[in-house]
Image 1 (cartoon, rainbow over the protein chains, first blue to last red):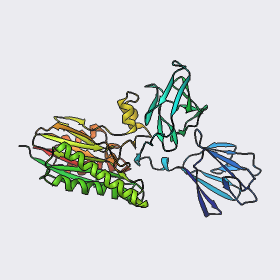
Image 2 (image 1 turned 45 degrees about the horizontal axis):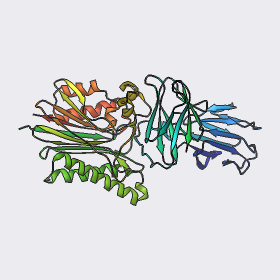
Image 3 (image 1 turned 90 degrees about the horizontal axis):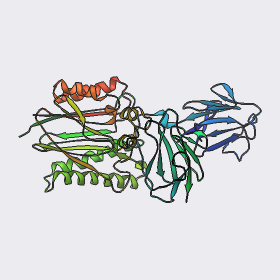
Image 4 (image 1 turned 120 degrees about the horizontal axis):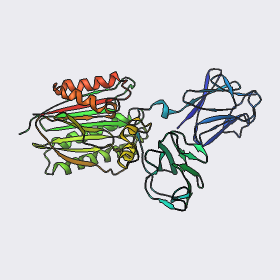
Length: 197
Length: 239
């Protein structure tokens, strides 16, 4: 799981695991990452893991900086340093940190039934029940993605293609995206709606 | 009567502090075992170590069983032990291991595997992979969705779909192949097969150097190419 290592003036404060699709950062205590710092705006920035991991400035007074450059929106990669006020947040993505590490995929027992409804493309109207631990979507030689049944949900992982498949119009990141009911997947010329029964 | 010589080498590689691979062999009893552990701290080493100790004991014992059944039972026992240890101790939670284990018979070999540790056979100048990885990319290749080249380049090539320890039961793939004089076998972990391609493996085995030299040469080759993971190789000569 990606995380932020939060430091202030070189002193490490804490690690924040990025376990949600969107994480907000700001001076108000109801932010996910609460920074007690007068130079931070009440709602300062947000990190999104939907599609490619990215940080967005939410119209802050003093700005959001990635590797020293002021940004409004910026993709994040492992090791990037975000500066917000007097705080620094280092973006750590273990998956890109150690590409050689073996990962064991363990399928979860089916808890919820899911299906894919083809809403556009050659097989429009078809409904596919997701019955397997792993369901491959796409076309050989084109975009390929695999739908993994995990504990607590389904994750769509891009496997091949010049560009990754898209979920709700956003390119899916290398580590995939956890699907929610109603999400729309664009892959190999078809659009599929993910539905949880 | 076939005679075999076996030698293995294992190395942490250039980027890891620990070696989570484990190997064992016995030419007299006619077996070779290789395991690649997964898990934080030293859990990966514990898992691969358990695989070796369980299989070594089972393969040495005189079993009143067909080799296929015996290997299957031994690997399933290793799975149960790892799963049990992982459930009992939070430090070992999530640990697992791959395995490739070969029993040599007078005219055949029997191989059991789980995960992406491999058995190759070099015969009369041709290298053949006898085991198909239990991995996400291999499923894509087998299903015709990806080419072997795409699989090798994929960022998800290290995602395995079966491992010892991750569930109370495991499905073990067991196969029998014939054995011929002049054959050379290679058991290896993904730290080798990831970095050293088939042509390079074939070239090392074709030299006809003793097993101990070939095993060390293959490990050295993977280290020259970066040594990004633990590297293990067991080479078997068939005479």
